[in-house]
Length: 63
Image (cartoon, rainbow, N blue to C red; front, side, top):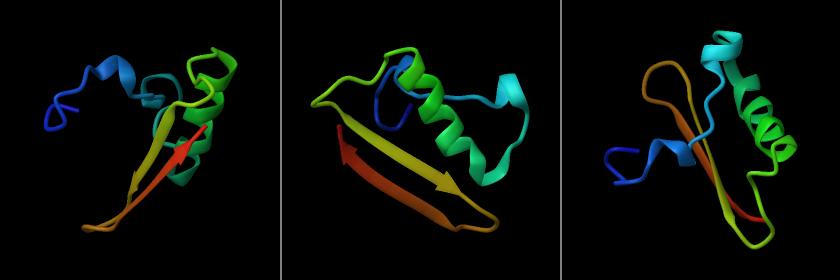
């Protein structure tokens, strides 16, 4: 978020609630934001996951 110059309030994080959940953190965080109505129609949502080493996966969706 620092490198993107975006406020951290725009990033969903759940580790402080559930601890390390591995790849399940992405749908868990998305579900949390959907229930809190933080995602609105027409907005972009980016999912970013990282694994061991330097493996990353990114997907961008328009809601």
